[in-house]
Amino acid sequence: GSLGIALVGLGSYSTYQLAPALQETRHCHLAGIVTGTPSKASRWMSQYGIPGEHVYNYENFDSIAGDDAIDAVYVVLPNSMHAEYAIRAAQAGKHVICEKPMGISVAECDAIIKACEVAGVKLGMGYRLHSEPYTQEVKRLVREKTFGEVRYVMGEAAYISRGNPDQWRLDKALSGGGALMNMGVYAIQSCIYGCGRNPVAVSAQEFSTRPEYFKDTDETILAQLTFPGGVVGSVMTSHNANANRMYASCDSGWFELQPANNYGPLSGRTSDGPIQFPHESQQKLQMDDFARHVLEGAPNLAPGEMGRRDMIIVEAIYRSIREGGRTIPLDIPEGYGFG
Ligand code: NAD
Image 1: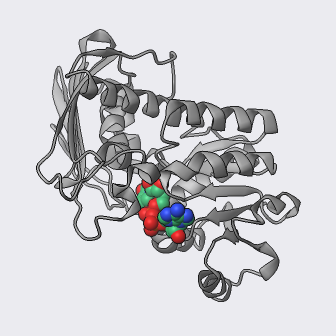
Image 2: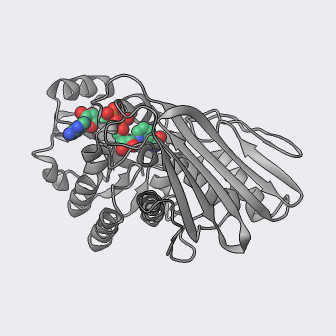
């Protein structure tokens, strides 16, 4: 079988990444859309051959419950809307894929996880890198201790934001925060899969150079993570610099990816030589992995618990900044999806 997916929110990520990827997937397909814009609905219907009965808007969204062609709902809305639509999708009996960040607070992540449990539906995050071969190779190098113990990890995820200062990513009510909410998860996760552990404490600092543009969202954040076993990590995320990199220093060598978190092709090296894999659409791999999880019981490579874990770290980073850079202990359940 093939999992029928409905995309909620037809913005740039749905338009330029997810919908094209769904033309290449083998275990899932684009079965429906949810949009508040009638002109987009008709354009997508003709471009992708979606019959009108599988097209929804935000008012009649809940009636998707009766649509047997749609097995899963993929929430691709501004961050502060993820929880509402993920929960409504679960209550409609649909499996849920939720874009990053999972929500704008740990409490929202809890509510999404609970709703999916109660409804008995599967929940996956839009964390495409976990299905991506360079990232999987990094995890293998860590797991097999190819270069011995990891001692230091670094993750950077940043780009320069220009243009419309009123875009939702710069509006805290819709985004929940700035660079950290948007890109921070990539830098945080680079450190986590770069050493194969979840952090136990974090401290952080915020830097602002364009306050007139970044009115109520963070511009640049540096954070320091400590991990069990004495591993330390460095996180950099920004809306005012270009950076896309991960690095891990081990007892007998090192490995790095640069770029580490864009749509690819990624590029990597170790102290022994280059890392090389053929490029495939990350979104295609990610959605096929989720579909195989639902259809065949394959592992969920990016479960809701992972989205929640990352939000625990994000909240702690904001708290450390508010409290003058104080070290905040992290209480992350054991084995919480760093593999
Ligand atoms: P976008 O601005 O291009 O699209 C947002 C969509 O939401 C638009 O279709 C817009 O019409 C709709 N929308 C509904 N209510 C809205 C409101 N009140 N305000 C603004 N827009 C509203 O954004 P995007 O780049 O497609 O991002 C959407 C989500 O996907 C975000 O959560 C983002 O973090 C995530 N994303 C993930 C990746 C990834 O690599 N995993 C990449 C890009 C975006």
